[in-house]
Length: 509
Image (cartoon, rainbow, N blue to C red; front, side, top):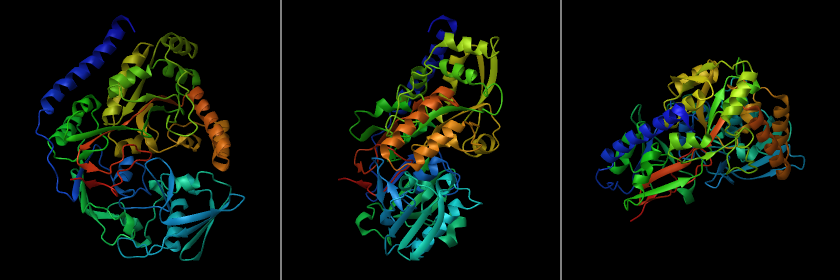
């Protein structure tokens, strides 16, 4: 890239990294990490959730605290992204794929002493699929036609059509089992079947989980007596907290430009893992100019994904061309469908009637990756005649209200954390406003088939559709940059689903 604007972009990036490097040199001159008590751990998080019930709200931070720690499901997803039994020991599927019979784990109680059985499982799923449900994945449960409980240890799901992903969906945070009498208060006082229960929540500061000594699974009782999650949004403060031992681990470290400074430190372990965090700049297709595919395609061709990754996330990350990650089965590389081509972008904008320029806003959450990415997008799009106005937008409350619910936005940027969630583009009135009957039909076929090869082929077709239609600017997959005390073991390197599973976390001598 040449010319004064190109130099301006490089100046934005280099100035940002220079400032961060100066801060890093001042910040990282701390003391060696202090060793925490052997039976408790302090975990750092960049975002504090507004509530603690993953069955009524979508933000990933909820699951990162409560999934597998407080709440459990009929199935679970392990670190390799595979489905495993949990509160269901096993299951059978009818030949037509429409009847699932689950055999439930015996001797399981919720934290309040209420027994878990088929009636509580039925309550949970009926609540999730009910008319008044606010479950973020409600559509997963819509395929359930009826639920039978022939005895306390048997649950039978009758489906309206086959659902090849059902067992996978049942392992998500949105599918965890809840106790009927406490379900309405789980947002602030969660009651689950997990190995930990809520101790104290000092909102704006920290949340502590304490070991559930009555935990049903004798083989998986945690070594930790407690775990405290500290909420630290500022990247420099995150780095200082790790280096000074104020936190024992930051499983998702939010300052990639400081990450290399931890490598080689004998007191710390660093890990770069896979995630499902797809950074996309979604557009509101309900209104001009985004209802014109030529505009969307032009904007995509005005973006150099590698420059976004370098400038926003210090080179960590992998470009994507649709709403799918390279670590997901059936991935198709679609980054070449609308590659970086400023000249072609300008020509398409002119063809769409915007040859003299275009201006709109992007509502940007406060997360570091979002603010930095928006600044790079702003500079890149200026080169093709587009003025991008950045509007800081508090996440999650304001963003969910304005963007997700009221659709009051032009463009926004966020990392979608759910695994293989390409089907969100088939949802009616989802925040993008994307309505493509062919795409919707393709997703429906993929979800209904029990043939793995056919399902992945259909997902490949769906990826290509999104890459061509560009309902969002597909930017990159964020890696999981983890840093923690070298004596701490059991934290996940990869994140196939938003989580901080503490079951196997322990201190080593």
